[in-house]
Image: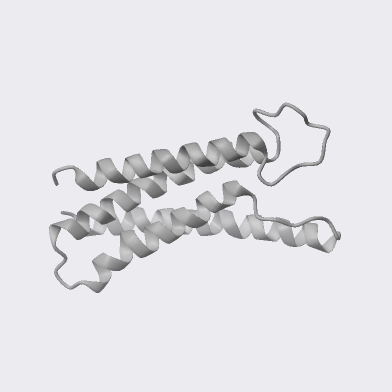
Length: 140
């Protein structure tokens, strides 16, 4: 198993996710300064979860254990796969949150989550679980 490949993938996922979330926080701070309603969209939880999974399950076990057994690599591999799926789900999720896609009523006040955003987030979390299961159980 190539440890550096897993660590690289998990690091890229984490860095990309943290960058996305930083921009989102800056936006919400601007909204707060205008005394508007502030919330974290459900789609952002995909990014938060992807970062946490890639760091805590993808990188940490490999770095902490001096000679990791095969199952640690399998779990890290699954964590990276799941994180990639969650980041991929962020794009349609945030577009649905702002009603750029799959919106029926664009004139009423936005909800958190928007109905289509809710389904997208749940669907991609299910896909992420499947990706984790497949990637972590395949023979290395």
